Length: 400
Image (cartoon, rainbow, N blue to C red):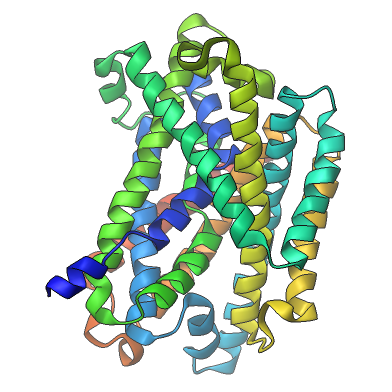
């Protein structure tokens, strides 16, 4: 038992947290705070709990069945029609979600570099895409990503430290835990959910858990890892909402451009704020710009059963397509901040597809045995799916 305790270390949960703390989270949380103050903090609480619930299911699936989520979706359904439907819908949702996310990542990275250089964001957009292609084609993403994630972590810590410095109203923060729906807030609420509960993270986490631990004796480790890591991510996201509420909402200021968001950290960094925020924002965008297309390829590879792995032409074609879509939308001339938020909304709409399939797989008692979902876990999962579907449908209805 002592030996097991010594071996335990946090891991895959941090991959999930690092993946969702990107430019989308920073932008969406900043806009939520500037427009609605503390009132949407409850949405982040819901999103954080949802992430823990769904990622625990994905991790449990790997440990018990010895299949990651992509393999399970390919192999578990016995009926050919159901299996084909699973593949098409999941591939569509993951590819769409990653492409939308990639757009926000590339734009976010470009905005960060624009803050610290005289070069325009459009020029940086093309350069970031080329760098991402080179890194992925040479399989160097792990080394580069570790460096970028370290910078993102430092910027995330900066928001938390800023909250301590500015001493916001604790009563106002606690009121934000009570669900409320200010006028025109549903779009941002769905974006907050979409930027935290990222569908492709279910596939990444499932695979990472299988690689790190590999059997059911480590199920408690998976839960501890997720609880600590995702809660930390939720606290960071809430810190961004709070600093934005103090910097903008309480002063009646609306965020109009990316560089405005840096103002939140001025109590901590003073004259260095723009440079350090820009560097962190670029790191968040660049790290996610590498992760999202790779995740789309990895999920597609697992679902379709490609044997060659990351060296296959099909694998490379998927991540290349995701990057190119991201570049094309990034250069389309839309408002960068609105595009980033829309990417999170798209993820929120895609989320129910991945969640429904995960619930179905976790109820396969032949594969999961006594570790299949309990009625309580199914109820929690169903509530999550229904709420996200309702939010998504409401926003689609509003468009028309």
